[in-house]
Image 1 (cartoon, helix red, strand yellow):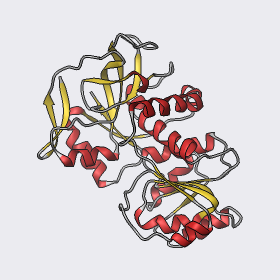
Image 2 (cartoon, one colour):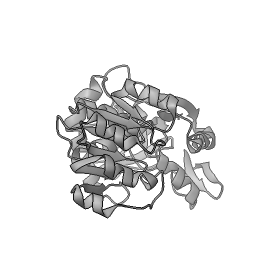
Image 3 (tube, helix red, strand yellow):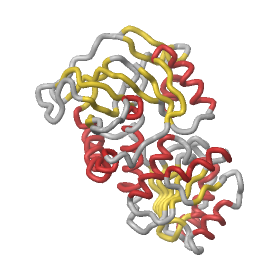
Image 4 (cartoon, one colour):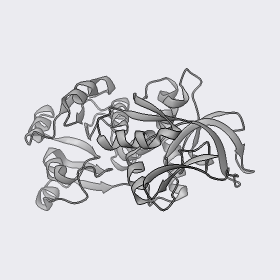
Length: 316
């Protein structure tokens, strides 16, 4: 079967063995997948690692202990090695595609965004109904999902940031009440103005780097800042005094160091809170462009250029 691996010169399509499921695993005949920022880093490392973090398709086979899904079911899943014709993943990461008009491409854009943003906003950020939310780097697929989840969970004010004016103008279509340009050093003052001087309760940060101290300025006393991504850099100055004065919880999250049991629990909690909204079509992501599996290098180049809004999908 065809699969994308990290070769010496980046992403390469190779022939690899078709997977066989263990007791708690599912094999999916993939029809679509989508790109995530982590795929860029994985592709650059080489070493033959399989690429792709999510997919959608039909169940091909299930392990002896799997319940809830069966061969032929239409499913979406988070996984390792999602850019392939057949994909092996744990049953706890597999969800049935809602019985509506959702395409495989649309379904493949959801798993990572749903589990990442539910974990960041609800579990780590502890957002409560009536609290305010700021999505730092809101025009990515994950960011757009975060805006929608914040509004769904009862945030009266959802703020999104982007340095691109055209992208900022589109954020309102995904639940954003106020779109800010972090290229303007005065943006924390706009947050304070919008919150009556209080600051925002929860910040989900996919930029980090140079906005770290501005996040502290924009946060409320007892606010929570959840560090999800580091597109702006892995290190920067940090004002420990403001951090302490406001008694801010600064929380780091990643899936790279989570156990399988943790990932299963993240998916269980996400389903409990969000799946009814997914089935009702209230949580979705725009697809900027679609590529074929053989054109994966072009798809990654588009993501690297950072000119897209929403998701880049792959048909398989």
